[in-house]
Length: 402
Image (cartoon, rainbow, N blue to C red):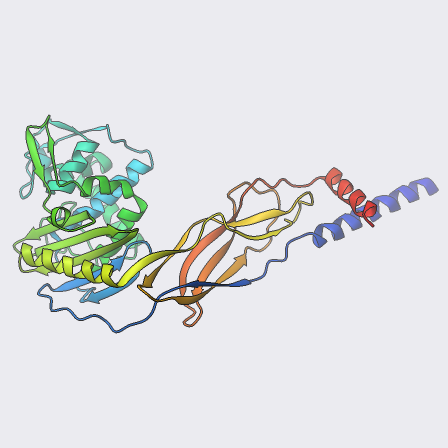
């Protein structure tokens, strides 16, 4: 009986010690403030003498708005509508739901579309790759409808997807009635909303730029020539897209996109009186962006932010690393004082797998406290849950080191 009591006491003592030891080696998750240097200096809003109704200039990687005028006014987008169609198509491609080699057959409905077209005949087939060329380069309405039917069964179902995506992106001044942009009652968007969906398309699905940057190409074994409706591609350094649109009511719209030295700007012009004005005002906005701002890499992915023990694991310390690069928009020739703020999730414990998110890191402007960049914090290797043998080994090491 005495021996039994001794064994019970030993077991209870070991369990208590294990509990205390486990908590001793748990990580204390607190804010970790570190100073770093980066940049953006406030300045007076630029002045332009534009003839178009509304304009927006956005930096693509940060979403920073550098200029906006009548940006929320609801206007007819014309074929700029197709940016949303392309966004949904690229989402399906990147998700593996459809491939570039899949065939799209033209329906009677698609073949009947007017406006910009390639005279897609009923029963004729094109690959998704060819469809992207037709839509991005010559803004083919017939091909756009055929693609919508391919992805959603009919255009009506596809338009539901378009509006759902617009809502998801926070496009509060947008309502789509079709996938192509031919003027229709209650079909509208704004310059700001166009900038938002343009950014989503080129940053999340950059392969689209292989199509929107084409100046000239062909279809049907070279028998049908294509020349881009976006003259920015031909006549502006670094231009890579994105989409033109014009009708007698909408007048002339353009979401223009250009990249130089790692910095990308999106310029949106709506309801310009002519194609030439649309192009010149786009260039003026882009020139302003490139002349005054640039993107800087301020905090690199895979940087070790902290090292420590994870609850339920006593065998080794774990590195907590920054998942993504953080880039910020800076005024050329200036620096900004910034700091890094790190917050870990509560109740982090093993087991964990490499890549699991354990916290969030924010880069903030030291003066304004504005968040200028964020990244998830992850573990860079698997962290197994320790068993009693692991705790015993750790205990032995502790006693031996005393």
